[in-house]
Image: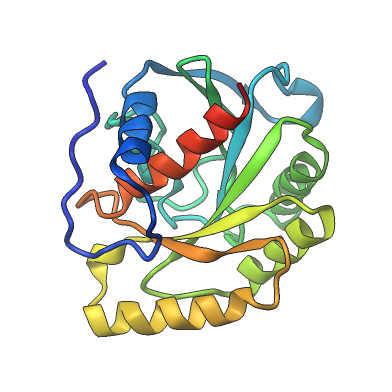
Length: 227
């Protein structure tokens, strides 16, 4: 596997405080082999809970798969599509036997039947509520749109189950600087209502590499903390 590309600083991440050692730890972790290991359509199909896990949650078409690919330096590790709702199971990726990344079904997209959408959403809720190795959730928010009711719903659930989570603004390269700053401030204000949310926000662009190094460093700290 080739090493992840160095991100470009088109839009600075809001998260600060990562020194060179932390950034290097993140680079080294995400330079390790990362392979798809399991897809679960139901909770009784989940893989063994043997490594710390980070779950990627977000509305359909928010860029979850693209972010997984950008973090790992792979173009096709996680499946991406222009058609929202293509991720219809919990997809597990093993990162160097140090961390598992979990790409979850997108929420808030209703092209499928109401019953199928609710079944997917119920599986996600129950997974987040009961997975003992889940260390953190990343709640992805599209920088072009900001937080929507479905985002608050999953944040409320994470608050109730005391699963700590970080908001990641995606597609920052698609927004003008002034609009991005407004969305960031509105999002940060909204987080004050959610006790399980970290106050800092990661601002990212999978296409440009913005904020990827900082997010890698944050996740590497979880892996190191599990040793």
